[in-house]
Length: 112
Length: 514
Figure 1 (tube, each protein chain N blue to C red):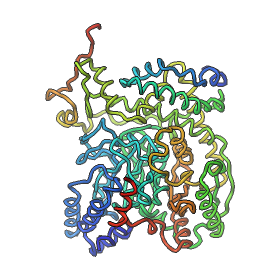
Figure 2 (figure 1 turned 180 degrees about the vertical axis):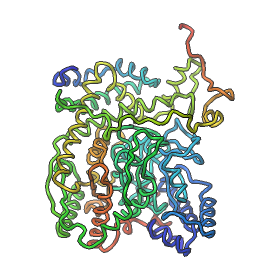
Figure 3 (figure 1 turned 60 degrees about the horizontal axis):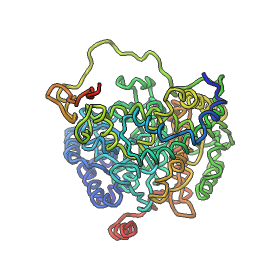
């Protein structure tokens, strides 16, 4: 766990969001952004991150994290077959299928 | 006759339906006619049901046959497009789901059908509920019925505008950071975000799973209570669904109308939610409300929530983080759009081309931001810190609710702003939800009701009530009491002052837009 007080210095400066970083994030998020979009998002992301980095000011080590506002635990159901979609229903919205399976293009490119 | 029908509250329409004075076919037709006459200008609907009149006829037949029907049987309702409907497209305002008809109904939609309400259609929204103005809908903005050049709030601007324009007496919305309450405020209508987990989200297209909640939209507090009674309760298909038994919210609302219902009630005014940056007219109406409550015997206490200063920042880390994960399902394989890049490509290239074309600017912005917040090296500093702020917000609420029965603030810092004004300024847009976000972070219920018109622009303002988790009934009791106080002091309902959107005003307004 890094010291949160180091955060703003290490991360907060706007110039640290670079074009290359946005390109990389777009790749991770599987969105083929155009060069113009990358340019625009680089600036916007910098502003937004600058403004929201202040969460680090109050997030001390002694404060526990909350992931769900009203936590529930051990939410199980009986291990029996439930109501499921038919194959036809499951395929009904697919861009392409062969009647029993979803169809996609090649998983691996030529260089792989 | 049909104009009278559309102006009735859901409760009054339901009693006319029950007595046989009006049929569901007549009520449904009146609303469909209204949609046909005004929705070209308002654009609250993305899809109007072709089955509505048939559904209404079936309900009339059941009633004629002497079947026992629920309190809202035969009443028409609009449904936010974030909710899956097996007989209508469900796009969540996105091109990536254009024309998609889900193979099942959301649990709340199934509950509406089981209670014999009549689905009228699907309402417009910011794409995947990301926005505060409905301008980020991929299908064009919704216009505020009070002034067609203004935004109707968001993301549920379509649902709020539909009830404000008398196109439907009721609607369903979803609220992740204010998407029910803020549109309610700027359209002079009522909207409720229930306790997290108290209404099923199965079949609600997820935005941020630790924040999302489905809730009612209406023109009166009692109508929201009646709708909330239909949709509440445990759902085994939603693993965050609470197993609580809920009281009748309609009874809770009715209790608020009794004389003296505000006597001795301790009401907290949240210092941090009524300060700099709030529009003058909003602050003035809020001061009026506090004075009214005092005169009705309520005890007003100023309370403070120091963590709220950080709430909006925490929200804009948690929401994008969760959204970037939830929206990974739009992968061009199982449903929705597929775009093949020129010359073909691998499944990953197809996916990237599809998401580039299918997602709008705000969705891309938030996915990239969320991916950043969750990436290695930044996770603890951003997402982890935001989750800690969430704990602090919960602690502030717990402390305030030790002192008071209910909390009050303006529902939104401003009235409806002009369409286009903030579209290129994400940070300014994000501030619209300043007042509503803390309730989502803490999972507590919140309600917005009309608070009067701002002097400077004559547009609606809203007041927000917040109660402890699981105490939704308090919102209905005190909300109904406050609504009654306001209406007695004004001598009319607020919505009765909305423009009629009759033919002449329609064309004048349209000319204004063009």
